[in-house]
Image (cartoon, rainbow, N blue to C red; front, side, top):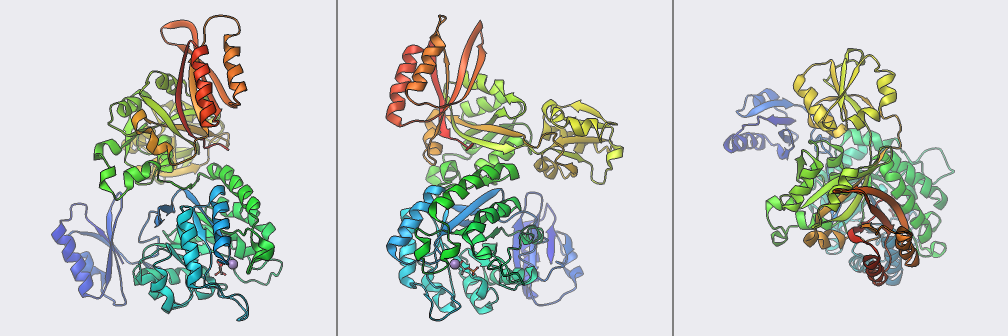
Length: 639
Ligand code: PEP
Ligand code: MN
């Protein structure tokens, strides 16, 4: 059952509720949500829930209708984020795990690890105990294989996962691995599940060959009831009458399971299809279906693989797949997880308090109210837990970062429909202490948001930022032509406004996050006229903090601003330098210089070159330009 606690419950009352439940044989788990705190109580005993409902501090008691309780979405409305080493799985991320079916030798796992790491895998897989159909087939290297796997994971900075097949190996394996994998054949090996669950270590739980979704979730429940809440579900194909592929990938299981559980769901296109050529298309389908990631078999020499060669990707195929996934992610509102995701997170979320200067400086500033698109970008760059700081204007964001009230700022710089956000460029130009350290692109998906239960025909006024309104013209002049479009300060603020008005004739256009934040209903989603609507954001910070963020990802973009002398060919000379040094220009924009009528500053974004050449190039640029400044260097998010 779920016990919803009153907001003002005292600690003593809460303890009394917990004690009462424990005395009656229940296991109790406290879940602190953004809006409410609940206790989940599971056990075999039956009591009349009214006995709990009357306890002091209890607001409501709801029985969990599903047979799986701890795994149920009813218990925990928000997505669970599982942490494996420093990689987080769940939420908006796409996490790719890759490696060979089996660890075959030290050299083999080292080679594959190097290759998948370069392409962007963040967790290394490799079997040391192989549950083979034939007892005469390669059974895995056992503990020796675990040693090599650990060594490769450490060498290439990837947490590792491997299959556990026997309860007797569980404790030994703890020394080597970051996540247990429970294979399809063992999904209902309950003694194994209990042993693994007891360790509290993350578990990747494959779906059984012939398991229903409910049986699969019951297996997750075994793990959770035994002591871990770090469970990832993995769809890996089920047995059907079809023989063209090894198994049948049940893509629909992904959204189904996401509705039923708060645990992250990933999929394994390799075992699902058994065929190398099917792996890439299925991987993209898995991402499009909303999964939190993939586990893919990659081998340095698939033709010689000891197991599952025909389904193992060549490293270059995996590399191509990663680039395709990277391109797809923003389209489906996801962000591809890269290692190290340390960047600022480490500084912010590290357990080492010495790295955290003071609570105040950890904030990340953005323009708008809670639920703004900029805040969504922050969640993607940093973390669900990032301490965001709403600001009234772009200028306030820059000031907050300048003064150290916020460590970072995230500001839009360009929209694919609306073009450059000039104010951001001007502010960058007028804040020499601040620098660009990162980039994130976000697909803008607009929603019509209203008071729950409102019909479209009731709506008379629609509030949103002028850009938001402009981007939904077809919907506003079509189905909603009876309503008046009212410009508002910002999109998320418009939702706050209608939530305040409590008038069903008023609606807003904003992100789904804004609707959730204000407990409003999405009356219609995807109402933007052009679905290819992306906004690109810059992450800014003070120069002295820049190295932390930058050191985490390879820098491959540079943003610069310059002005030229008033004589023929001066711009040409600058472009000539860029050309000589191979600085491939991605964007060129001119802006009037404040206080100097009819004079212009030029903004350039370019691909980054070798550090030494770059220093030489900037030396020449400084000499040639009337003024020149590097606005920042960063890891580009557009591929
Ligand atoms: C594996 O991942 O190597 C494996 C054996 O997978 P499954 O349990 O899904 O067959
Ligand atoms: Mn395999």
